[in-house]
Length: 102
Image (cartoon, rainbow, N blue to C red; front, side, top):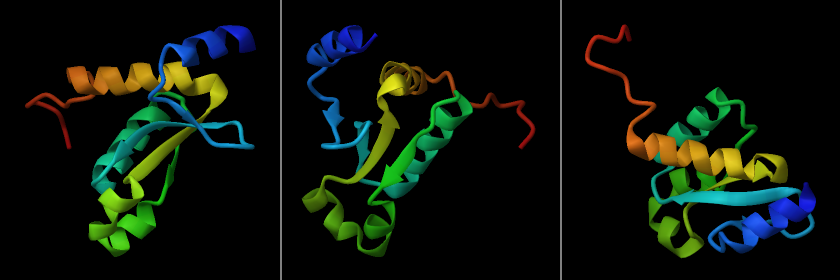
């Protein structure tokens, strides 16, 4: 399992590991609300995702580009599922239709 994950991570250099932790950065957003929306989609998909630096960005949005934005972190076992969820979101699979009850 770990060997397969290492091979997959080698093919996806945009995924960053957090040194000394079992967490990986799967996405970065300059707007905290967008990061929170994606985190919610991941959690709805069963992925334990957490936000890093969201409060700092909300305190001073001008720091976002300098600090690299809000990071979404997931455990190693969920990295592939997290990227699949991001791709599904980008395809519009989480969008509500016009007849949805809000």
